[in-house]
Length: 637
Image (tube, rainbow, N blue to C red; front, side):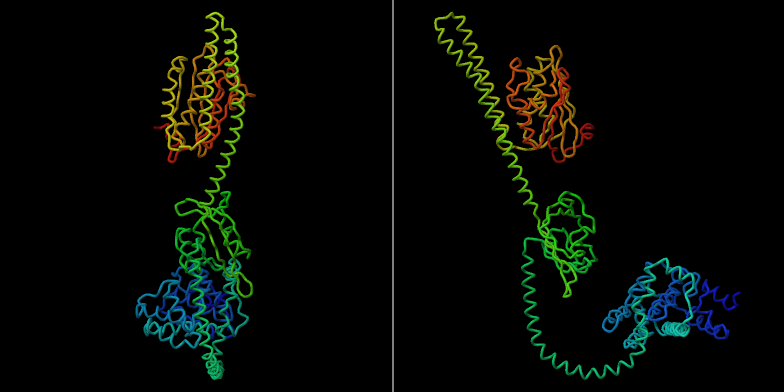
């Protein structure tokens, strides 16, 4: 059963603090303490949230943790802040910085005095929560509360900004907080309420700030200031003798400082002209030094006081296999975490325009005298041009290997297949010589055979020349419309199309990056083969289509012709390998030429057929031209 006083306290605070359960043996003490609390704290004219936050901050300096824990509870909504039911509670986002804010001393107070002088005087409204103005007033009030060496200057700053009335209200509040701290020290049996215990149990970070606050000893230390002043006077005499020794050393120090400054400038100048990005950061990822090349490589300039990791985390970094590194896998963070340097390791860095460059990274940890890692120096070198040169070299080597391989095949084929028409011409000529007296009809027949062999040899030589030219020389790559190439091929094959009654069905085709002359030869050979190797009694039907495969276009030339047995489908691309023998006209170089052309363009070609009489589909890949529309866009147009 609560007493009338306890009921009154509960109504005002929303809870019954254990603070007012003390001195039960003499109700007058509790009543007067409650009266002083109402007069100096609850009914004080200062804003409720300002009073409660200041109460919490001042309680950091009390060794007994009851007051700070209870009043943090008020701030979070476990009761009413400063007994004001209309005052909204605060989240930990606003409370934790208050519990962690260090108290400035000496020269560090001067900027806070300046902030006080810049505020409206006297204040018509108090500064917002966690603002510079609140921090300045709290710091000055705390020095007055603790009666430190800076108390007088702090009290004068408060007088200027608050005016006489608000200053007296503040003094009254400080007096009550001091009384509350003293009262809790005299009553060690005072325990935290259950709601506050639950709050600290639920929020480990909050409990850490309250129960292990480094400021707890400073209130006790303030009581020793007077005694320490006497010791400081004794030290003053010692200081005079030290000053004399220091003056003798100052000349040497100035010389060493000048030499060090000169060395540092030389080092900075050397780093500034290095053909690589150089930057240094501390253990928190804050940039402490960078050169011009670092700004150019990163695409932005870091601020030396920018937030932690704001510069280093502003770009995506990938492994050479294209896998994106997670934030904690960034090379600088790995060096800071492990202390192991990174030497000559390649990464891919994403630029602000989303383009990517290859970089070579060398990262070395910085250590203090005890060997602990305190930061890192990173050197990033753009090796994109070197990588492109290596890729070009590898492409040239592959091209040379391909050319040599085809040259070997070509040489064998030439030596083998050219001998046949030469032997025929030679044999027929010998017969003609031996039969000099023969009939005119026999002579004409032999001459016709010789002419036929010569034409075949000429056609073979011409095909070999085209095959050799396709595999050698410079590729004149440019943007080529495949639709226009098909139209040109139709004109070249017009006579054969008319003769065979062929239909060529062509879906909308894209633009590609290719040599237009070789591309026309490719389509002309494929379409010509479809017309030449047609099924007897069936008009040729050739269908040309395309589909997208990543960054490549995959073309298909489908016919209803004789088809190709599965076991011979690789055979048909070999030079001078003819599937149908000598019964069907041809040199055996058309499909070999197609394979050479697609290979030189970085693509490949293959054939799909279910066998003889089932037709065939020749498929090949080519690179899409830059800015080329998709299949859907081509069809829509």
